[in-house]
Length: 291
Image 1 (cartoon, rainbow, N blue to C red):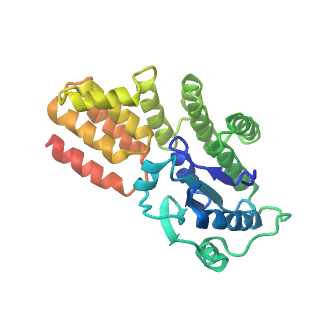
Image 2: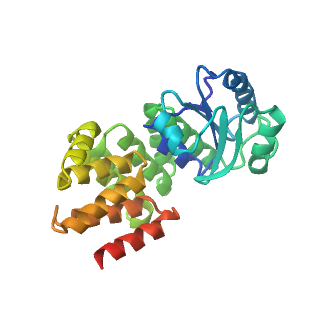
């Protein structure tokens, strides 16, 4: 596979970061498997197109054998399959082996023609932000942190670099450092989603594995502690519906648990999902549960 920083291997740990990148740059998810011959034929064609666009979109490759649950969650029933994500939403898809012309038709409404790789970007700040996000999605966290430190020194007024720094620090479990960065941001709205994610990470710090929590939830319907921490695990895995169900169950059974902690966690989850259409539904369900 190409080593370019606009081609990413997706796994359950970085899928949320990859999808979040689609707020700034389109993401083409390529679902494949080692045994799939049409997938092998499609791969070099996708890399060729990605190289031509040179970072105007992210090619995110998902090995369905290693990520079966992820493929199921994204509605993949056969491979090869391509799904184009723009602004966090499915903007188009192709199933089965596709000619180059069809792939370009999928991309061009959002990208236009491939740009000259020597062309100077019109907005260098946007380009830098996208580069940092790509490094983060690929697991190059040290590179992302170095770039963010330089950007924050040059543009200390740009809150987006500070919030992204906090997110990257959370990626590598530097929770205290992430908290310190967020404490320096006065605008609660801008730092809200990052603070919400930090809340769930702090709640889970040093706690049991997801497998242990799943066992406890299955074995005891009254184990509210297991449900609470399993919900936090689901939030961080992007399984927001599952998290909501667990937290609502706690609210219904015992509002006093963790001093009304389940309701507060739901509010944090809603804050984390700012802009997501599901937020309105979650608010209605919480209201119905409380009243």
